[in-house]
Length: 212
Length: 127
Image 1: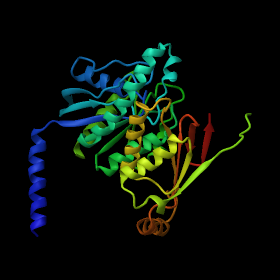
Image 2: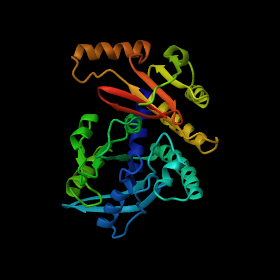
Image 3: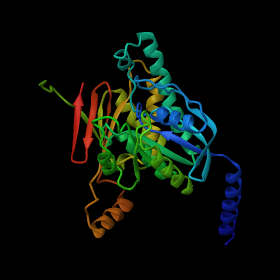
Image 4: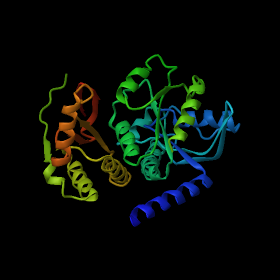
């Protein structure tokens, strides 16, 4: 009985405290899935300025980046949150992969080293998230172990998840395949680069915030 | 097509690692990976163990010369189309003896170039 009361008071206290704190919504996914492009699109739409650099070279984001107090005022509803854009999670980093993009050997080695640190940082930030938007490249095979590991970790931590199938502007994009890989989740298909289907994305983001 | 001359797989039974802590399990796996072994675990790591394996792999990739990481895949039975009783039986067995119906495949990325998977097949592409 005492244990139950203690748990109840802890929940009430945490609930009060959380209301005063800013919600943290993390953007997670494999490298080059368009996390920063989506973060930029949201920040441009609602704060007027972009968040970080994007590139065709994988692991462009190698540090966790924040945008404080992003306020989305959509169809009379308001959502204020801290946007946390994270480096893409991978199980291997080979500096030689960057050479194909014309990066010099020394810079490629430096990029690879920073990318390994970025992945560690991304994983360590998981516990701090209130909700997570998992950004996947809809033109890639969704059945990769990294995608499954990210979502599995969010489920284990009871963190609400929204799965975004990005890059629907590409011919190879297949939202149905992403849906088949993660049937328990609502999938929203967008193109962060072109700004396609952002209305549905914002609707889903509001729904996600209600699950916290 | 290149002919495979030899492939050595190191099999770990779930009972061999079930008593180990997360750190010990991950350490055990990475020790074998550093010896260029491809590992098959009869069972499945928990989500947080997989995350820890990626974290420690990245820490090593940043410090151990010529180590670039791992390839990882888990093969599980597809229960989506199964009946409620089959799912219940599977869930009960999982609780009693651990998730032994799954197989985990881990290899150093210098040996295993890619593990391609989709729901019906798994392909191991060697370097």
